Amino acid sequence: MEQIIFHIDVNSAFLSWSALEKLKNGEELDLRTIPSIIGGDTSTRHGVVLAKSIPAKAYGIRTGEPVSDALKKCPFLVSCPPDHRLYHEKSRLLMAHLADICPDIEQVSVDECYMDFTPVSAHYTDPLSAACQIKDGIRETFGFTVNIGISDKKVLAKMASDFRKPDLVHTLYHNEIEKKLWHLPLSSLFMCGRSSVDTLHNLGILTIGDLAKADPFIITSHLKSHGKMLWEFANGIDDSRVRPIPAEAKGIGNSTTLSKDALTMDEIRKCLLALSESVASRLRRAHMKASMVSVEIKYASFQTSSHQATLQAATNDSGCIYQTACHLAAELWNGSPVRLLGIRSSRLEDEDAPVQLSLFDLGTEKPLTEKQKSLNEALDKIRSKYGKDSIVRGTLLK
Image (cartoon, rainbow, N blue to C red):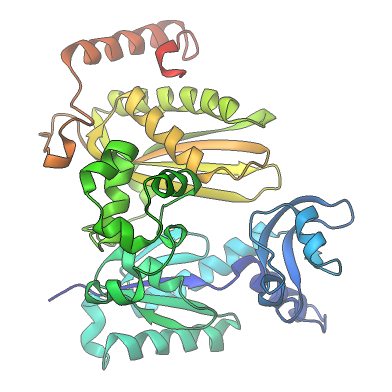
């Protein structure tokens, strides 16, 4: 039976949850019905927008932009500070509710998750009516709304949930991508950040359909393995499965709170270098390799964002992890001061597992040579004896 995947995403989660809490505590005005944001202090005009109401969106206010810019668009904008303890509790209750419906839940952030609907599909008339039932049940139980995307592929379910909002269900099956997806701009493609969009625009590629029809080897030559992934997503190619086991149980990571906020990409890269060395060293000590790398950025405003990428081949090499982390950070960073950086490796396998290559791998990443492995072992020994900060690969600081 073909798999059926739901992507469930809370509409304006932070703002919705804060609005409900204020109503619960006796306030009469619903933040969701007025131009409002969760984020910085409008009195000092500092910080960035973490979430926005639909009326605020009508003024052109964007998540991640400075509060000062948002106020220029809407001078009477109402702003509330974030309450992360509240958000985590709301998230916990939602995930528990969904797990009662179907246990195969993969939570990917505080306000979104994937559900493998396939095992329970026989209990419902069809996926669309089931998703509508789940969506309406969340609204009636908790008072906030969600969008649900339905597909036979995870990435397509994710993009379907980003279609028109709020409180709606959309399908995006593989046979629907040409009609529903290909006319959209590149920025609507999952994981296609600003730098990738700029590179593709320079190649004359403006829409997701343009990318889907492009020569994948040309895309890979400009954007490496990330380009291959974007080309596959544009064509609805995604073999990943819903993984109910939390990533924390199958990963090795490290993060650091910076003593001084990072203001430039160079400062971010230096921190990522140290984190990459730490994560790679721990992987090697565990005799494991990772095929997925994720980067987390927490801004001075306490807004948190993350991106992840699947590697061409599993690795425990510092250089590969570092280059991937830098690429993810470049896609993710919005220019605001950075307070915390983190790197996590997941989808682990034994370091002696055989390496599988495809035609796309030719001319890109290659398995480590014996010389590189020996260098890694030597660096690990030096750090073990003299401390983790005793030596850093200068060749990575490019």
